[in-house]
Amino acid sequence: MLGFLKKLAIGIGKVFLAIFLIFAIFTGYGFYAEHTAKKKASAMCSSIKPGQDPAPLLARAIADGASDFQTRWGNVDGVDTLYITYVGLPPFSRHMCLVQAKSGRVISVRQSYLD
Image 1 (cartoon, rainbow, N blue to C red):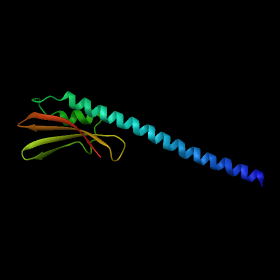
Image 2 (cartoon, rainbow, N blue to C red; image 1 turned 90 degrees about the vertical axis):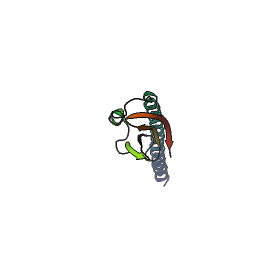
Image 3 (cartoon, one colour; image 1 turned 30 degrees about the vertical axis):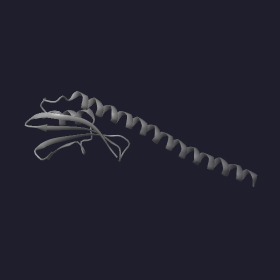
Image 4 (tube, helix red, strand yellow; image 1 turned 45 degrees about the vertical axis):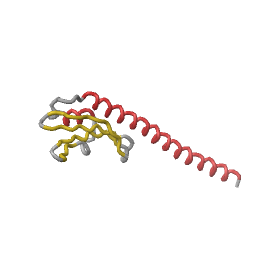
């Protein structure tokens, strides 16, 4: 009976250790992904200057690692807006560089965080 309880305690301990390790790895990845996404969004925003041609920005953002699903152009009231999106800890954390352009020129750039 004592041998069985010892084996049971060791088995339960291994299960808790495995759960703890999975949680620790997930947490470590989350911190890394958040830091990387924020850094990339900041670097992208700081590299875009008002007055420059916005045409190559979408391809450049995708090549830099931005989400190809969430990075896209939109148009509101005649102003084109490029939402360059870097995903931090999936699926909720999104670090964005918002680029507004009009008449073929960038008019504003700002960094944003969603979720």
